[in-house]
Structures are given as structure tokens and as C-alpha cells.
Length: 492
Image 1 (cartoon, rainbow, N blue to C red):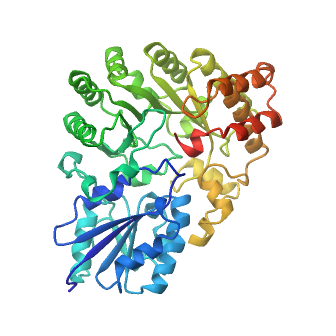
Image 2 (image 1 turned 90 degrees about the vertical axis):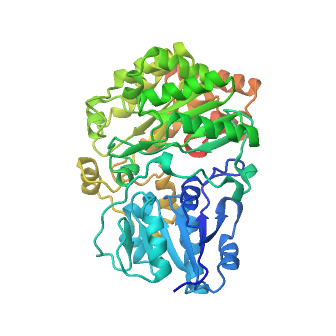
Image 3 (image 1 turned 60 degrees about the vertical axis):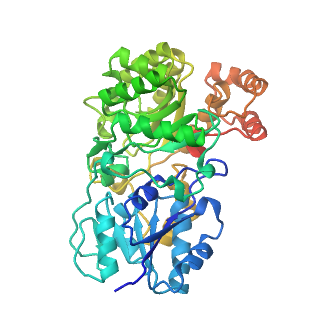
């Protein structure tokens, strides 16, 4: 029986300085920790050697559980060596990983030898239950957890009603570190108002975590919490980090009306689906804009209807809908941030040219549209797309060390150059992106001055007009000189 249990929540490094996001997933679990447990937060975004801080808190590890949230990319790159060192230094420390990387790769993680358990799927129910198992030394299985043997039966976790989850324990952390200046405002905070997503996009890692489920916090609860944060911390803007904020039109309308009725100024941003938002009433969209909605991140993905079907977004979403929403948002005054997933293993050799021409059409309809370009990268999901990738020679690493190699770090950030089906797609996409970002400099880069935007546009005008994107060395030099921010890599 553990006498004085302690939990250390570890948020590995994920972003550049000045953009440190609030570790919402860990704080949501911390809010549900039973009172007999003590807990601490260690944020790798503020520590080059977080293992030292964890080691100081853990003691000999006999009464301590380390709960780590892990996404592929930078978080995995810090979580892996940190936990390996801690296993060597504190053998008794119990280490639990959760998040969408562990959900997909639990066997590989448990085989590493330095992680004791993995949470697969949502952990709102499984984590509190697992704490009691760990505390008492029980061997009873916990729904959503894999412990020890990778052959242990598993049923995926479930989402708790967000309105039943306590408020995040803002008073237990230095919240000022997570209030940043960016495109939305001078004092912007991250917020998570819903869990999951009802869609099954075949390139999205969230699918394995959500399994088609979505539950949202009420508009009343969202507004009241933000009002409290504004009164206490003077926030003026919020980024909703929901996988899909705009699932419910009625919730969005009520939230907007509450902001408008309050007379408060809170600018906001969220992620959504093009086909969903096109089904919103225009009066709802107008109220959302008037309430402070400045930009929406949207998956446009492709100009090819067949590819849209392959991505499991077809049937309700078509490329024409993207053009329609670009026009609607332009009229209302909401900035659409369209992302594309380019060069999958079934694309034909001329598809990139069609995608580039399509993006130019979007810009002609609504020049304010933001464009974000990603290379297609496989995720662990069954289906034709993954089968095509495997047939082309794609395979995941067979160890955590393989996943944190330089090559795979680029891959996880969708910047890799060595996917088996690639021809010259990577360089062509980067060249087009460079010209596009010079002719239409992103508005999210608040440090870019007016004369710099003008010089970028002037210098790139002949290339954009002539559709000549090859080797834009002069534009790359200007981007480096101006320290141009690429939203697809750095956010805003």
C-alpha cells in the first residue's frame, strides 16, 4: 500500500519560445485527481533537462507516478530520452504514457522497457481508475489501459461529459507563462471546450483516439469560464484547441450570443469542417464574426474529388465547397485558414499542378484566405490509403529510438523528403509555398512590417504572375532576413 502518493504530470517540449501552449490535457486530468493524491506539473517547454526537475520531485520513486502526454514529433523526442534516464536513475518510478502516439503504438512503447503502462484513447475515466489500481497494488484491469503484457485485453476509453469535469486548476500553475501575444490579441490563452471529433478522416491521427465520438462543453460554461479568466488574468483572446469546435451550430450560436450580450471583447479562433460550416445559417456566421471569431482552421485537403473520397471526407465535402466557403467568409469577414494534404501514394503525376491552380482560385476568390500545405504522411489506420503506402514500401520504425531520429522528426512534422512514392513533390511544394507566401504574406506573422510585406509581394509578383515557382532563392533569402513565420510549422 502506497502511503503518500504523488503524481508528476510531464508535458514534453512541443513548440518554440513565446508560443508555449497551456498543457490542457494534463490539467484536465489533474482537475480530476482525488484529494488524497498530491500532484505537480513539469513543462518541458520551459526546461532543457526536465528529467532533473522530475527526479527532484520523485524521490526514490516508490510513491510516485509520472504521467506523460506524448504526441509524435518534438514531444516524443524529449519524452523518450527523459523517461529512459529516469528509468535508469529511479527504477521504482512508475511511468505512464498517454495521448495519440501511445494510442497508436502501445506495443512498441511497452517493449521499450522504460514505460510501465499506456493509456489508449481518452483517459478521463481510465486515469482516475488507474490511480486507485496503482495505489493499492491491484491487478484488476482498467478499461483503456494497457499494463505490462501487450496481450492484455483492451477496450478503448470513453469521453466524460465536459460539463462534469471540474474547472482546470489554474491556481496551481503560473498561468502568466501561458498567456501569449499573437495574431489574435496581446493576451491570448488556449482553451479546450470539447473532446473528440465525429469524423473519420483517413490521414488524421485523432481518429484512433476519438473513434468517432464528440462531446462538447455547454456554451454557458465556456463563456462563464472565459469571463472569469478575463477578469482575473485580463485575457483578450482565445484559441480553441478542440479537434472540431464547430460540430454544433446551436452551441456556436449561443456562445456567440453570450459574448455579444456581455459587451466583452474576446477574439477567438477554432478548427472546423468546411461542409459543416456551410450548413450554418448565415445569421449564425455573422453573429460568430461579430462576437470576435477572427479565423477558422479548415481542411480543404485537395482539388481532386476522388482524393477527397480516399481521405474519407467525400460524400459531404467537395472541392467546390471550399471555394464557396472562401467566398462566404470573405463577405462576412472571417479569415479561412485552409490546409492541404498533398502527394499521397495514389496521386497521379499531374495532381500537384491541379492543386496549385486550385489554390490560386481560392486566393482569387478571397485573397485573405490563409493557405497551409502539408505532405501526406500515413497514420496507423486501416484502409486503402495506408495499404497503398505500405505497398509502396512505407513502414514505421520498430523502436522509439527510430521514431526520434532526425529523419522521422521531419516526417512527423510533415516535412520529410523520403516517402517511397515521392518523386520531386517535396521540393515542388516548398517552392510553390515560398512564392505563395511571398506574394500573399501571412497575416498571422504580427512581426512582419508593412514595408516588408510590400517588398515580398513586389519581389514575387513576376513569379506568381508567370506561374514560375522553380528555385525562388531570392524569396527564401527575404524570408530568412525577415524571419518569416510559417504557420504550418510554428503556429502563430
